[in-house]
Image 1 (cartoon, rainbow, N blue to C red):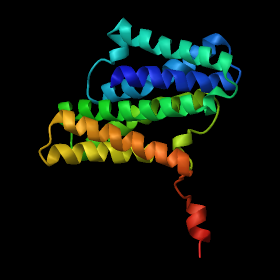
Image 2 (spheres, rainbow, N blue to C red; image 1 turned 90 degrees about the vertical axis):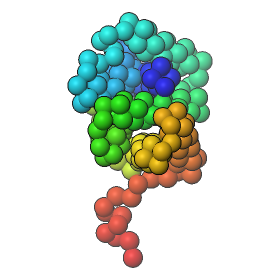
Image 3 (cartoon, rainbow, N blue to C red; image 1 turned 135 degrees about the vertical axis):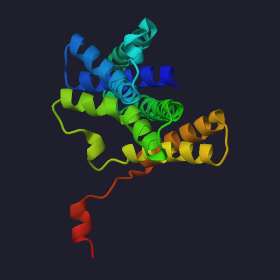
Length: 201
């Protein structure tokens, strides 16, 4: 799960930096931040050294995602909005949500902790990347994105509480997260703003 998420999110983050016309170093930085910042925050919360600082293979996977983004952008216009990138983003979201839920469960945190750490693992990197791109983190705006990770993490915890195995919980968590994200993209789901709620009849 972690490997899939690293490659997918490095690709997504790098694609955004390419659209903003960052140089190659900037593209690599944004891609790696997208891939690693959420997981590093997760590891700090469960009191362990971030995996990115322990294994060179982790960095290699991130750089592979960066290279994929550069390659895709060379042959596709608007690569960051292309179905390949959107699907990669959904897969990465599901992978990191599941990885975060697994780590949190192994750390023995509460049900709320499992959901919170799964969400931070999944969307933390994207939030840091948006700051580097000089814009408000999009997970705080209208897009139905972080909500998918909350649903996935909650599903993981619920399956475990009901006696399901870790592998079953992981599979269901990943399916719920990627499924809701893809439906949200295809149907244009958004989370309503307070202003919309105030002006609705």
